[in-house]
Amino acid sequence: MFAFLRGELVTASREEAVVEVSGIGYQLHISSGTSSRLPAPGSPVLLYTHYHVREDLQQLFGFLDEEELQLFRLLLSISGVGPKLAIAVLSGLSVGEIQDAIVSNRPETLFGITGVGRKTAARIILELRDKILKIQPTSSAKAGAPSAVLSATQLIDDAVAALTTLGFPKASAQKAVSTVLEATPGLSVEELVRTALTAMHNNL
Image 1 (spheres, one colour):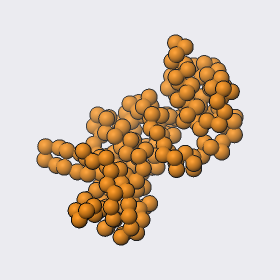
Image 2 (tube, one colour):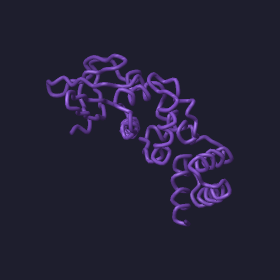
Image 3 (tube, rainbow, N blue to C red):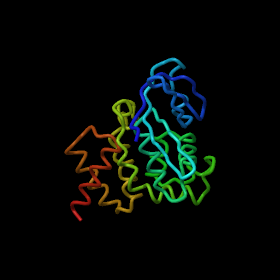
Image 4 (spheres, helix red, strand yellow):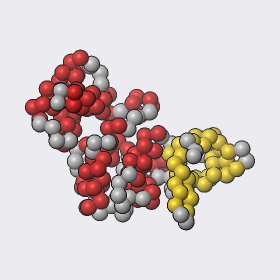
């Protein structure tokens, strides 16, 4: 229903923000990550939104980054994970840290976030490990991505680790990653894994 709201930030707390658009104040639930990066009240702001409707409740959620919104929606696709828990996950870790935990199969990273038990952490990794790399980073995120300064060896090791976590044999993963990197140098870890995945699926 709402793709984003562009207006003036009226107030903000760790969990909520109010944005005025054309004289109407919209109350949005936000993560602590978004909260910490909001401008000062009175400043212009753009928040990407998710409109959540339940029989007895209507809520609007706001995100500074599209990738945070994408991850929020992926979390909602998991059985037993509602918007409150999804926001708690995004408040406990950054998008990059959550992606890394899922790709690297490290449920212990998620366990301990408020509301996330061992079973929920394992379910998040199990259900999202094939979807997490579909999140498209914004141009600003790409510019500051740690993978941009990784050595070639570290880049290959990280990509191979991600592919073996997804169930591919290490030898096949190494071959695919090396072939892709040779043909297209300069890829980030995420881009390298996505391209290698496509190549491996085409060769099945």
